[in-house]
Length: 124
Image 1 (tube, rainbow, N blue to C red):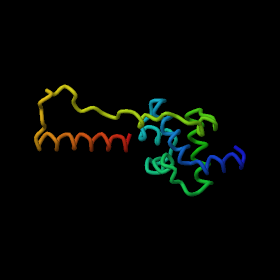
Image 2 (image 1 turned 90 degrees about the vertical axis):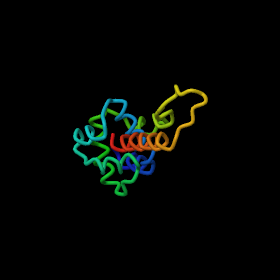
Image 3 (image 1 turned 30 degrees about the vertical axis):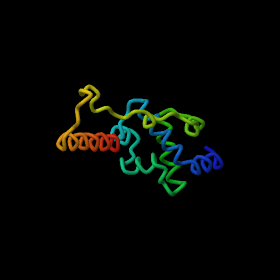
């Protein structure tokens, strides 16, 4: 990878991170399994996916490892992708009667379920 290309990728590291995350998921990896596969800690991998790596040298080192595992080209990292996060994330219930109004306990349960889904999305 020449210096000019890595600089372009680094300047677009948020987009690159989102695309890497989506490609990783498409290939069936979780964040945990992928971090083990590329030998990058999960927190560091999260920083890379979020475009928060501040060193171009570190960015390039990790990007090379990831490209080797995912077999992904540079143009794939810069292209616009429709992410899974843009769509519907979860449906808790859609079969309640039309006149049903959830009570306080039910609302709390749905909030907990939402928190669990967000937690799983963060870790996996």
